Image (cartoon, rainbow, N blue to C red; front, top):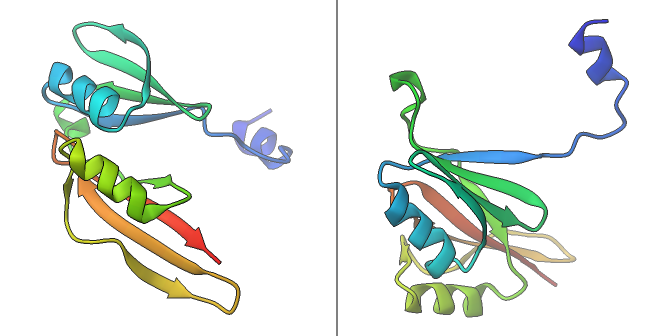
Length: 131
């Protein structure tokens, strides 16, 4: 059985882990642990550290090969109060690219975002749906 057939039979697929590149692992661990307040699961020195992000494992790692040395995809952290989260993270040293702003509005809700960078220069974002 090929993986394509096997995947087609799944009813859902969970994300088990997301990798984010780091060039200075100690600095990156400090940012995700201290600035973002994420739960450090364990470190596997000298190349990796793992965090829990509400059941999804986030792996910080040094790029293993040159072709893997690129900025990460944007991680969107869902928060209930974007203004409070923005204020708290700014107070801990997160570098935001601007203030929280509305990106979409429907009759039922507004979608707000605020973009910032981690210690390694990767883009991250806060997102909040407000009714």
